[in-house]
Amino acid sequence: MTLISRLVFFTEKKTQKKSSGRIKTNEISIVIPVKDNQKGIDNYLDNFFTTHTADNFPKEIIIVDNNSAVPTKISNRHLLHGLTVNLLSCKKPGPASARNYGAHHATGQWLLFNDSDCLPTATLLTGYLHADNFSLAYAGNIKALGQDRLSKYYESQEILIPLKTYNDKKELVPQYLITANTLVWTDSFLEVGGFNENIKIAGGEDVDFGLRLSQLGNLSYAFDSIALHNFDGGLKSFYNRFNRYGQGNRIVEHLWQTNMKPKPFRPNRWTIFNGLTARLQYLFLLIGYLRADRQIKKTVHNRVDGLA
Image (cartoon, rainbow, N blue to C red):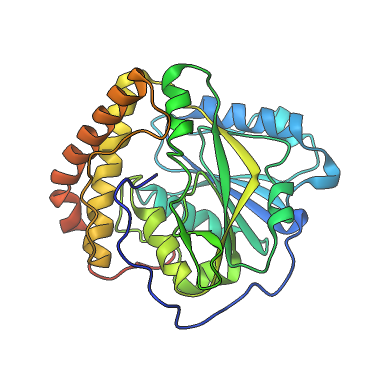
């Protein structure tokens, strides 16, 4: 998810932890939560085995079904490449719980979180190797799969790219993480307790996790690691997405005691279409923000609920 209202703080780290080893593709566990998106999982795996060969395979791919109406399946064609593809079932609702469940069963030193509506490119893994600087986590790059105007709007607005800030060395770094494409050192994931499972929606849970991780050590960008995101669904999907993100703004505001209320903004790339779409985005974010109290009541003041 993305946040339109910039966080108004960047607290000093109490520690300066670093990952203990270099990133290696064969030490990466890919974790993908999914609910009611069999087509997305099929497309992800088809594309993965088209763009990757055995010499740069990860350690494993873990698919976590999170209460799909029709249980997710792994096709036999995806089990013939010599790479472990595990399918798990997490009954506790919410992508935070599903990711925690997958991470708990992962065996790699690094956790790569992708979404089921993403497609890997040939640089998904190698892009992280190029960015390796002993950070605890890396924010990968997301580009739009489609070429329609709405998909290109998502991309030009960097909807799934974390907000940029400067660290004490004046380096441009992500202020948090977005789990459509992000790599996390497993030890640091466990140290901060994973995702807050009290956040049941796909909105705010990754930002909260990234903020907690940023207090432990450094986060970095890995722009060469590219995943393609499917932004199909038209205006209905656009409304649902930003309504959910608006709720996420309010949840993060509640947890971190900062101002996350959406504000009107000018699109990064001005066209009449983008200008109208930006107004709708602001409106949908605001609606979600204002109706988030129900979700807030379900989110305890503790910032994390532990691993499932």
